[in-house]
Length: 119
Image (tube, rainbow, N blue to C red; front, top):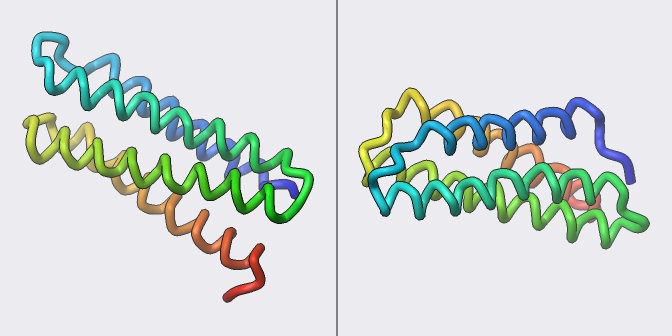
């Protein structure tokens, strides 16, 4: 299965944006660093899973790898929400990434459903 290059690039741009946000987070607050590290892990994993899905040898493997990306994107959305709502990180930093995570979730959900034969 091959994913569109545009989608692969979009997932990689999301990972890059997560890295840039992580670098800007305040180092003096432990809770921010913990959530930031979780976000860094899950946000970059989205792109890694998407890349793996594009190399899948079967529909089942494709669905599994893209499902992993879906889980990581959803987890990223949670960390972004917590950083903004509970840690006081500027919404201008978190909201664009939350929006992108949500859009990636919707796209991947549709891809998985179509691959499985659903609508």
